[in-house]
Image 1 (cartoon, rainbow, N blue to C red):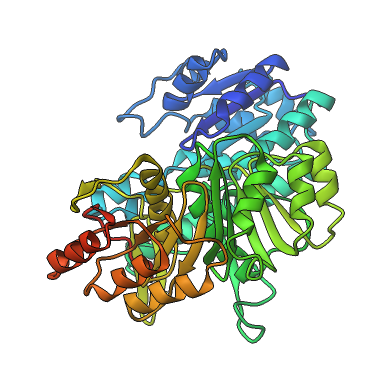
Image 2: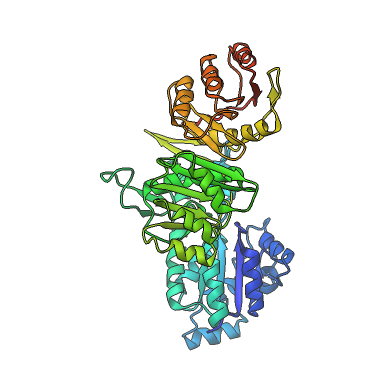
Length: 503
């Protein structure tokens, strides 16, 4: 068979323009609705609106648009039964061979603070699950796609053979039923009040174990995510529970430098090396990040903001690394990395995740928004303002300290973190730990502190170590005393007004 007609109706528009162009190039007629049709048309993809195909307008504010015999009949009739084929012809029902649907964002809606029950109910998709289940049932003839990460496989098979393989359709159908099952469970839990703040887990996959071998664990990916932590695994062993925690920490840190050539090295969810440089030399950036703490980097997770070339891959292979993540890899780099059979190679697909963060405690879930900064000041509070190099070092230290466990102190120059102290019960202890662990010179560095200095003792430790600039939120009762200490040491200090605790 050849795919002649596709129906595309998605709330998550990721990759839909590329899919539409590929289908149009393969002479596939595209039926679509509402916002999806507009997105495809804006991308130059020819679209037939569902209302034109059915001859029936969308009604009730768009609540009913795909619930029509020409849609469901086109998806469901059995192409192997002559009676079905003849009846479809008599009724003027054209076959729909590919259905691309993802459902209304119910999870995101109920996760929003102040979400009302009517708002949640309005995000219960009706036509979408009907089409998904219909196409999945008829997967002998129809391809159903609910996940943008599957677009590439579908496009490749259509371009090479005109249709998807039965094996692919079977996998897609199973995934579709998991998708709708998780969606329905989430709605049921919300309406019966059994979910925590209206939240429920989507279907998941078992992991070997949790943080320790005696703990059971699983990974539950949200439907809108392209894979584990928004990545596609290209090679290596299966990801473990701890791998996923560290990978998430590494990606969140490099997201701070998405427009720069940057590298983050993470061990036990804590940074042990970070660098960003002006040049495009990825290998050099990695070496600068590694120089902060090469001992702790053994068995780490490394995240890059730039695709890896062969030189970067060679540098990385000199270190035992559990996971590497990057937006891409050259053919030579990938071949080199894949010689490390156990190395988990991840390609980053999704961008910054702005969804609420969930964390369990005994008896329930905590929900908060991601720490993406917000309105921050740069108030110079000392007699001496920072010089340009100090400003650059401050900004690097400030971005890194957000991702170090509280209490947190980070020494940095303009290109790299040089001393990191975190997870301490007092700020002066964090400062002393950062100094003790530093392998690179601290003279002339800037320091980021995730919260204010309650006393001047922490600042005195920084000055004695050689730091010349400090960036911190301010807000202590002893800010004047701390500022006086900075002036006494000839340091420059900036207040941001924003705290970045990471518990």
